[in-house]
Image (cartoon, rainbow, N blue to C red; front, side, top):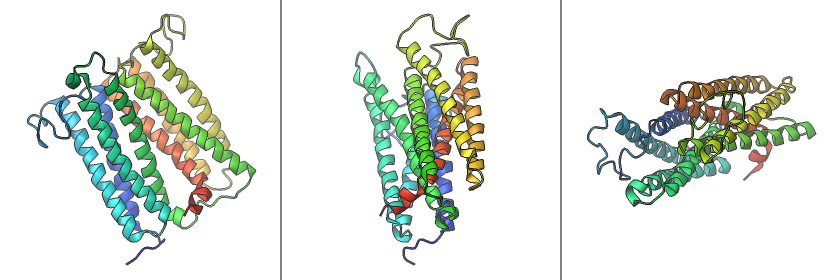
Length: 322
């Protein structure tokens, strides 16, 4: 059997499996950061010189970090399978290119994770850990790009996409909605970036109260880098919430066109509400590792949801690419 544009149930299910796998990977990465276990092993790509290091099943820090490494390896293998599957069976060149881009990004992600370990001050004996923190933040943001690509490929391989279920009229209003969707996606990504900087600067409790910053004000009484990035993350959350509420309202105005203009607004609203609650819970529980990890994970879900509707709204542009 050669390349076709037909719906391939097996390929679509494989994409869903990839999404489940990256969800586990994102949780493992977030939990590793939450319990500060990123340097449980000082070497890379092996862990204490082994792919099955002693104690990793019984010691929590080693279990978190090694599980994260193994799940990252799994995503690499899944990406290879996706490249091979689309190369053999998928006639749409842009889908095949996305699969290759996914594999390249996953490999780059692995290198960033390795650099985070090798350039940590525990290995370099440097006076500060800024270099490792740079790789940490880049690694966290790269994971969101991997997720974005996987969501794109999954939608592209879905039956609804292939049967032109998501074909929308090209008019001024739709074009405006596309631009707003891109703004919403980029704003969500920037908020996740600030969250990554905050987490890896260990500033999650730089402002230890919520919603007030002190006894009587929303504004911190003193400032340093940790307080500034934490406050920026809070302010960004407020701005993003307003933007996404407006985006949801704009989507609902088009609900007569397709059910996606009902489903996505509901999904965005639910995930956004949960994310705000988890952010508050992280403060109220003094950064309980499970609360912090779920805040990180649901943030990724929010990005994926916003990207899903953005990708659909950009269908004409995507589909015309050769």
